[in-house]
Image 1 (cartoon, rainbow, N blue to C red):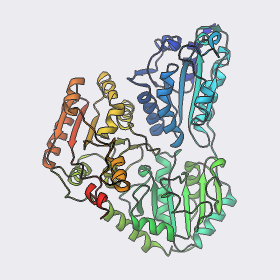
Image 2 (cartoon, rainbow, N blue to C red):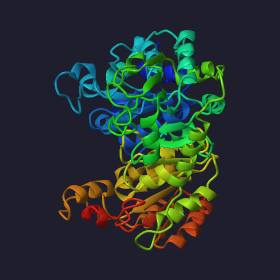
Image 3 (cartoon, helix red, strand yellow):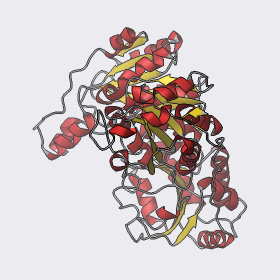
Image 4 (cartoon, rainbow, N blue to C red):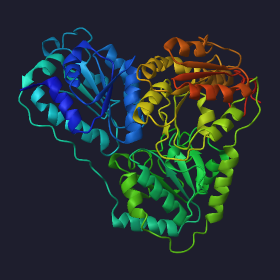
Length: 549
């Protein structure tokens, strides 16, 4: 006889869980008690949204579900931000929620929420376990659902009395991974399309990649002389300094890259959904009928033809597809090799940061310094805001598993993601980028980094405004500023108050020594950059946007 709490922990152990992220609650004390005797590492967080984002980051960097536990009502609703990120970003994650006791359901009990209704549109599967004997079944199924097809979040509701009940139950077994592989007929058709192409282009995106798959994709690109772009915030899927790399297909796309995709006669889209951001609001590929011959490779059949009608649909995971197609060779020397070289040259020019700008601090030289100072395996995280443009455009990603940023555009992601990444890879440098508005959405997770001695470095780009919103506001309603100014704390002092290391950068030349001191401190650190709000993008000022010049 075992309690429901013990069965939950045993099912997690059977499925290879090594850590969970949580904010404790009285509704799942039975699980916390079972974790006391488990080898699973429990990381307690400061807010449920941050805990869920940490679980998302773990799933994003490992391909295995990140696990999060929260309590009912406000705990669950706080966590919904992380669930939404995992859903839009196709990241495997499982959120466990302590629920009111069975006798109190449907009475609007204390903190009661109907989770099937609340999470129904932003999770892949939502279930409430009423019988503790079925815990092994449901938890193992949750791992299978979260990782198969298009990965995503699963939400499991746990009534309090179910967790304390004692039952006999089957021994939990690990889930069986499901792989979708391409057929020979589809590979033949793709080979024929490429052999007949004049201007092909490859776009990589989505999840279910691994280091071996990325290496095979590089080999395919070399064999076929293919230009390769990575979709929004998936730049780690291809070495950015490889001669076949053409750039990132996302917000603020290089106009030369956009033109190359529009002029392509065959587009091979592997793993991605080509949503609103990477498609430039569905203009690079017209929806529903692209001008280009579209070959769409995706692990979930439900995504094939959902937005775009493909010329050729291949239901396969990226890893399985590149393993199979790597054996195919072109019939003759590809005629587009010169175009591939031009595309890479255009990327190198586009990704070279400007060295000047308004104010005493220029982000261009700072990015140039970081590109030289950071090792290739450093993990960079960020949330959302105009500050992220500097990372998105000018950081040249070299290796798989070095990027964690929400394609959903959610603010507040960078700091909790950095905590999770450092817990996962303690020997690697982890740098979080955040705007002043972005940081204060989940910046309290800096305390989690302190608690677990995780020396992340958070670079807070402080311009005193919600930058992205101000930019749009000035463009649409010039000089009519409402609700976008911010009065901020001293972020360096805040870091020291938490027990970390703090630095303030007010001149460009101050950044490098400040960053090195943060590195040398061995503590979680915040490096605050005081950026002039006029420096709203790498190429335009707020005044230029306001004046439409």
